[in-house]
Image 1 (cartoon, protein in one colour):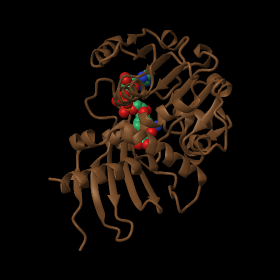
Image 2: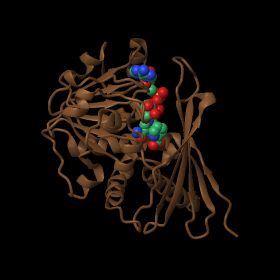
Image 3: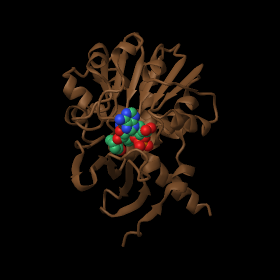
Image 4: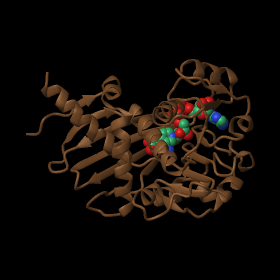
Length: 315
Ligand SMILES: NC(=O)C1=CN([C@@H]2O[C@H](COP(=O)(O)OP(=O)(O)OC[C@H]3O[C@@H](n4cnc5c(N)ncnc54)[C@H](O)[C@@H]3O)[C@@H](O)[C@H]2O)C=CC1
Ligand SMILES: O=C(O)C1=NCCCC1
């Protein structure tokens, strides 16, 4: 008989998951994904189940990494929320299975995993695509992803200036007060992004919030929100001027309003750059359109489970 599943919840995930372990493992996994070698990664485009009554979707994200013996799936629900709603915009659970027997080994809180792995992948995109002399980072949005992006970007890079914008200046000020380092609150998106070298968009907007005419040539944009085919964060000017990188070509063509509705050509996956199959065009304006992939959850799930087992056996 297989062991019953363990439950690893938020506080333990926070304790066990560190960017310094996660970032190199994700970089390796993105490279494996882009080889399309089914012995490395099988990751179908995720299934989206509409939750019309609740203005949301449940996304099912299975992944199998045969060589690494990792079988995992995430259930993540995403919702449109009214301003001031106390309900979460994203709620996720990660399930790790034994690929040989098919039993569930662990059920994990997926919110911290989702926040950290998404931010870590944006940081990888910036490491690969930003100007090496980048000095100014702008974050548009002040929610969960804004915080995880602030944390990993300030851990991995040394920006001289960090700017934050939110639709509500009070929310931006309160977000900034919760952070350790110096951050400027901008009163408009234009003010926030003018001259910025790296721009992270982590909003729940459905219409473009970032306009290409404000973006400095050569800047890198990590675009994380707008994960449905009818949603936008970036305008056509930016999409057409930029060289567009994605996490998964199939995912972007199925789900990214910024890619589908602008009609732009995807230049490469991040994994193609990691595998040196496509160049990192650092001197051009670049957009990394992030949708999120199952493999980005499978990697931290294995890491957390292995650390949890090591910790439990040492007690
Ligand atoms: N690419 C990926 O892998 C992932 C993407 N996401 C997406 O990232 C975005 C942010 O997620 P969370 O930080 O968890 O959400 P959140 O609800 O914690 O924060 C959202 C932020 O967007 C702002 N916002 C809402 N509507 C807006 C509008 N119309 N214009 C400008 N700002 C607006 C809110 O004030 C808040 O600052 C969402 O779109 C979510 O679906 C989330 C997880 C993973
Ligand atoms: O990959 C994820 O996890 C998500 N992607 C799109 C928005 C919800 C969470």
